[in-house]
Length: 220
Image (cartoon, rainbow, N blue to C red):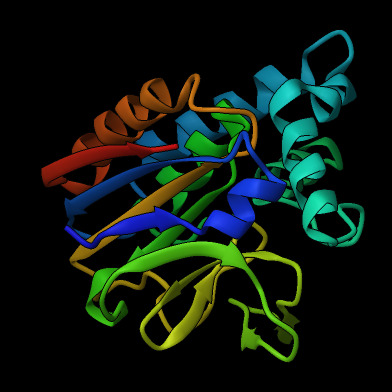
């Protein structure tokens, strides 16, 4: 299990920062129809709310925005992934359909309102540190151009930044060949509800990706 820590400088600026870590062995397969139905159900529940857009002002989304501001990043330009997924649903688009593991993580992110990083541990080198990106740091985001990481909360291993609550990197992304993953839930409002989100993720990964050797940790 890779060591995971929160940088002291980030913790000073964002005292409510906390992380929920799940490690598991998985079988990454094409998204099963039953999981697609769960994703559609989650979308429908959101759109059928009396005021769906009020979700964008929930405490977890607001805490993420505040964390970005504290680190010097504009949360209107660089959104946490949970907010980005919610906005996608509110605009009338469905959740992305990638593979069984990625889709479970996106579903849990939408349900919990926590941004979640997902990494293929075959490509993570050494311990992982959650810190603010430095001037000049970039990486190629998944399906995106190079992401300016300065001031963005990022996950770094011994080779440098490889993920963030906004967009993860191509270097450690989960593909059909992935068999060992780390999923990291990010909270800027304290550790409350992280365990319930980890439990939900564990259940879904066992159901849809044959997850085993599952381990949890909460860092705050």
